[in-house]
Picture 1 (cartoon, rainbow, N blue to C red):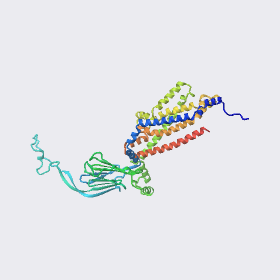
Picture 2: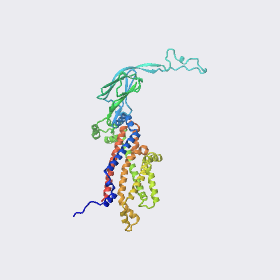
Picture 3: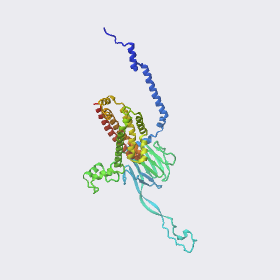
Picture 4: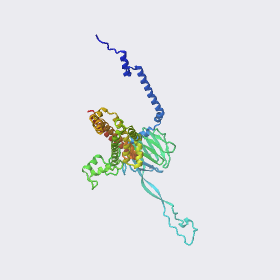
Length: 505
């Protein structure tokens, strides 16, 4: 005879008491899920309204954001075409042009001709006869001292001369974009549309055709802004046409315009280094090339790498010091290790004080105290991480298994031996894992606090961003920071995996 397996009423009540969630109806669970979903939706809707996200997105200037992003991966060449009232022009480049001292780009075609100019030069003033010393004044007018047929002092005499002048300039951005300047007439072609403007060589620009969508003039006669997308832009005023032609890549990344290797192909540089005659008799070409790369005036590789190393050292030293101080203090903060409640509370409040002040604020404080430099950054990391690691370490101690500690006590071991053999084996892998994580995290944090003067690459990054024109340098430093973070993250993860794996053996 088979006994019945159906649970009795008492057994059902016991199961319900131990596991009430098993007997909850599916309707109640569905209702709770729906309420949670409605709450999340309402919270998101409130956040959208409270922060005016829709208004911000609608009024955001995405064109400027796109330009900034383009500046990260490109560079501009900026010729300025000055237009004289007689229609002739003069072309100049920015002081630190990526094309070097004698730019002659293929995309800027110039037509020149010989013109005659009248140069106004002041005539040499004849020396006036000195008045008699016995007289206190002179009845002669100032011009009477000069001969009647002579020019007065300061009067200008015209002198004719001939010189080469630019009479036509054509800027080719790409296949669909071109700008031509000739006879005080500026013609812009972009995307199949043509805009013609006249300039007076002074301060007035007058469009001759309706403005297309890529041209903007706020008021009649004022400058006209021409936006050609990624390829660049131009600004037309009454006496000047400013060209901004954009090219993909980082200009002069290895050799700046002052280097003897500037403008040479990689093959030419390789031949010079391997078998060419010495450019500098005092050193080999390889040493000269390496020196030119390190001291590149535009990219400042050596300075950037040095600042990056400062950031790494700053994060490492700050984390090590914080771990060394938090380690002994955490035993005083753990209730199961130090029975004194007053000691526990004092140490825990000390940890709270250190970590409640953000690392950025500590950096500002220590920059004021010590001056700009890595010492301020190390101190900021040390103070913040001491509080955070101390709290984490003490919580790890409070969650240990007391059986192992009691086993060591039972053999009559002293208190230090109990902590050494009964506590440390349980928490040491956790301590090391958390310290490694903070070291990797502080590499990123050290970049941020460096921007306020705490040294490292953060300060260099902030200086490049403040110029609002060196965004390719910003991209270069950001990529270096990302590479360092990726490497340290991999090292930290590998070390933590080994530590935690050993703890389970």
